[in-house]
Length: 459
Image 1 (cartoon, rainbow, N blue to C red):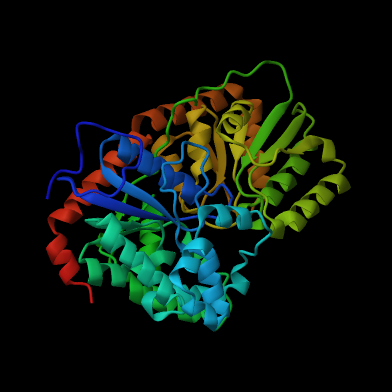
Image 2 (cartoon, rainbow, N blue to C red):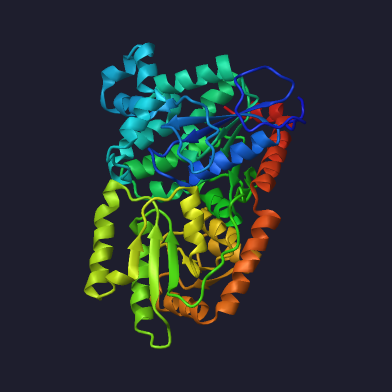
C-alpha cells in the first residue's frame, strides 16, 4: 500500500483512477441547504487533505453540502434525500427504474427542494431514522445497493470515511462487498437521537449499537465526545480517535476595535432553542440594568429554519416586553467574508447552549479573530478552555452567572484582549486545517496498514 501523501498537492477532487496511492472516499451528509457545522468541517478537512496530496473524493449524501469556503465535493449525490424519503413512505418507489432514480438524485433538483420548509424535527422522523440505520435491511436497501455499487465500480476506494454515525448502516455492506475498512466521524448525533419518540428511540439506539460494531475506527473532535459516545455506542474507548477541528485561517485576523463605542456581545450559531439564544437575551436584561456598564447590545447571526421561526419571534417578543428591542439585532445567515467581519466587530462571543456541544466550531472562528468567549461549563467547552485559557465558563442554566462573566469582560477590556490573544495563538499553533489533515492522514495510514485484520473482524 503506497503512502497517502503525494509530492504534487491539489485542491481539486480527481476523477476515479487506480494510482499507487490509497484512495479515500469521504461520504458527507448534506444538510438540506443550510450552513451546518458538520458540512463546514467535512469540506475544510477534505480540502486540506487534497492540498496535502491525499487521493480523496468528498461525496455528498442526502443533499449537496453547503459551505462558505471553496466546495471540493463531487458534483453528484448518493443516497439522495428524495429517494430515501419516497422509498420510506411509498412501497412502489422501492422499485423505481434506475434512470428515474438518477434524476431524483440530481444535485440541481435536491438543491431546489432544499429551499422548501422541510421538517427536520426528530419527533416526526423516527420511522425513517430506524429504517436508514438498518442499511441494507431497511426500506432504502435499493439506495444502499446503488451506493455500494458506485463505490465498487467507479470510486474503488481503499478506505471509506462516513461523516457521522447516522450513516453507520452503510458500513456493513461496504466492508462485506469491498473488503475495505470504514472510518466514522462522531458529530453530535445524540442531539437528534435523544429527541426521537418511542418506540423509535429504543429501536434506533439498539440498531446503532449493533451497526457500530461494523465500523473499523471512530473519530471525535474532542475527548469529551469520545468518552461520551464510547458509552452511547457501546464501543471500546480505544476505537475512538480524537482529532480536533482545524480552521482555514486565511482571511481571519485579530480584531481592531474603534473606541469608544457601544459594546457588542455576539452569538453565532443556528437560531433554535437548543443553542440558547434565549439565555443570552435573559443575560442582556440583567446587563442593561447595570449602571456601571456602558450601552450593551447583542448581535446574533446564523441559520434560521422554518421550524424555528416561532422561537425567534418569542425571543423578539421577550426583548420588546423588557424594552430591549433596540439592543438586539439578527443578521441572518452570513457568508465567509460577512462572518469574519461580524466576528471582528465583537467584544465577546457567547454560545450559551442548553445541550452539551460536541463541536463548537464558532468558538474556533472567534478565536481566529482574537475574540474572547463566554461559554457554559459543559460539553466540549471546559476542555477547550483548559487547553487555550481563552475565555470564561459560566454555570449552565445560570443566567446570573452568564451575565456576571460577560460583565467582567466588558468592564476589563485588557483582560478580554489577553484572552482573545491566547485564542488566536492557539488556533495558529494547533487548530489549523493543516494540522487536522495531517493527523487524519496518519490515522488513515495506520488503519490501512492493518486493513486485512480490521476487515476480517467485521461480520
